[in-house]
Image (cartoon, rainbow, N blue to C red):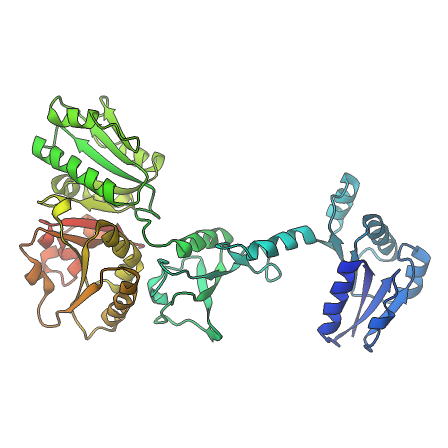
Length: 472
């Protein structure tokens, strides 16, 4: 049985002793020294109480004979606490010591404490501040007394409308972090790949503290925020030399329409090779404070697009079909959604369409897809191609669940016998969601032979298409 010496003084120390006694641990013997009368607590065989002035070195030595595994100083009086520490270090320089601090220490104390390899200073101000933060809404809850206590263990409640609601655990890219436990009411769930996260679940997540901060923000992000989390603003690149007047005019109209519907902060037009005419006058006449028109008279290509994306916090790029297909790899490298316009104005698009393929990627971006459709006021249809695949069954379950978040129900169609592309071919009034993978960006002369519906996106290229980046 190890011996632990506790120097106690003040209300905080009394509360600490009450909790220690309440733990009813008989693994160690506790020697408690205080200038206060604590005899009423002396009802346990493994506790011994002494009442005297703990700043007295001679008296401390009299009861400190023998080996102690730990010293613990819990005092509300700064001068007493520091004096006790100095006395204990005269008794033993290598005994592990815990020092409760609630004051601003002078430089001498700071230097002394910093050089003591066997001293742990516990600042109760930090602990109290952390606990108070736990009671504030939408704040991450950390495990302060487990592991390194650096935020590598976090508890977060899934709010209604979160992008994590109704997601299967396997659909969530967990790089440098993991969902360790799920608390659902009074139930503790060890998550499996097919476990679906429900509203108000409390997730215990572990991983890199910096990564967990981003995960927390992602979990707390509610619907109606797109183009966030990719960025805050919309960006349209117009090349008046390579685009016809009709293409430029339609691109301006489509961009203004999307800007009026989405919850972005600003719409930014970057105009290269500006040419005199009606379109240029239209852009110059825009006076809305949330629309920025950047005339570029010096660059004749799109090299500035990468810098613009970073500088202006771009979360969505709008391009017409010809320009997108010409610079498809460049758009892929930007790793943000790209809205390719179709043959008709976006204001005339009637429905958002998802094809049941690449289940994990689709489910991973389902919040973006449903969010976008809700803001654009589009009906949403999920074409469920093959009911023999369990992944598709899980995806169907996911969309059935997430549809409850939106006023318009997500329509789910099972096409187990006929490829839905056959039905959709020839349409031009859809917004088709495409998972923007590397295989899509690279393209292939033989893509038309693929059984991957995502790679067959060009069969619906007459429609508007939103290319959503995926984790690869």
